[in-house]
Image 1 (tube, one colour):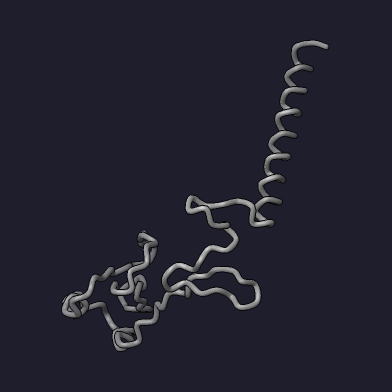
Image 2: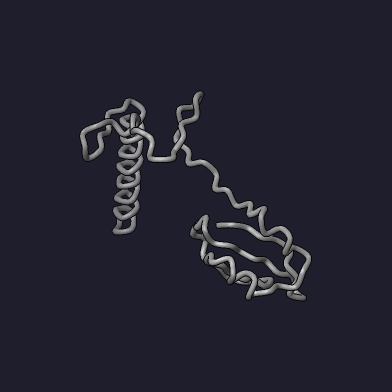
Length: 126
């Protein structure tokens, strides 16, 4: 056995140990044996504020954010008027095609999407 054979054997042994550890954690999690810092099972975690639990699967899920800004739909099809958008008193973003934007959700923010000619094509809150 040369030096390379020992390295391969060591890697395989380490890989098996990792697989065994992952399997142990998975089985423990399924049985509710893994506890959080408060000593409660991670399987039976209470829902967060605003979070819903699916009645059949018992999975936690946050409700989908509401992005429809219906009140501003009159702007669609018109040239953007930044003074009008600013007059709403809300945080806003005017987004020409290809604009980069953060993905944080802010229900108070108006996102005004434009086409290449500066015409409003969509308005979303968030």
